[in-house]
Length: 403
Image (cartoon, rainbow, N blue to C red; front, side):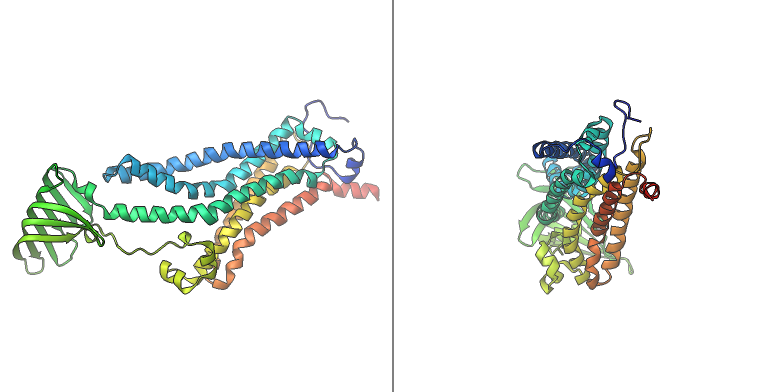
């Protein structure tokens, strides 16, 4: 019985059904459909990527805003930190946006009967997969640019800027009449700040040592920056050291005294680089220089390098996996929600498998190949689903009828 106008029809069409359709469209018509479908998927991908990036960005920005603004940093510093965090956020949401865009876009075309019109011209599952594969390659290229180029650079800049900010305690001192705590076990009070930046009436107490507590008072003080970091120069002051075990108080007066602010805040002038900051070539080689710079093992470095190659490949194959699921089954009044649910569940399982593979590969440097397992399984499952779609909705019943 012919389907009612506007009624949704199942995606799979067998070879026998394909021979009964109208003649195939011209190459020009097919090319137009490819561009149309790829364009629709890219449009939906842009929308969902923007929404997901905004959600992730707001989630991170709230905590970052509290830490930076309350610590005395400016709004410009907050915007700089959030901008440097964007490449990693975008890289995380690209595969999700590609999957959702494919599911939504193909389901919408099916609901509007546009996919039915395309299939009646003779476009089978493998032919329909071509524009989806083009879309997947575009997503994979974007993910590769982020993983190999922008993300390492942004992480390095973010780490260096964070180290500078933690070592720069000027903003924490520039508050008159308040007891501040720039570090654990450290209390600072400034009575007045002159227009020249001179600190008047300084009190500083250091309680980090488990055996002694030292309090510094000075009539005047200056913040001085040097190659070794910021220092607090106190003039005309006194240091009182209390020995906790004996309860003895030692008092020392000084004309000038320099205090290392890097030690005060717990900031370290030397920094071990995160493996994700290194170039991909250095990670794959995992040489002594990379190990010394990061303090990471060979297994961690090599897995990170191969993961940068495998993750864009995984993102490129997810749209084909979504298409394969959408082409399963027959007509249902409920639409394609079962196929959509299956595609989402498969993507979640593959992502969990990626986490398991990472934990296993970090234990052995020779197991770096596990980084490619999710991408290989995604491509294999997509091929099986597309091949299954070419057999029609009930291949076993047709084979028995023919027999």
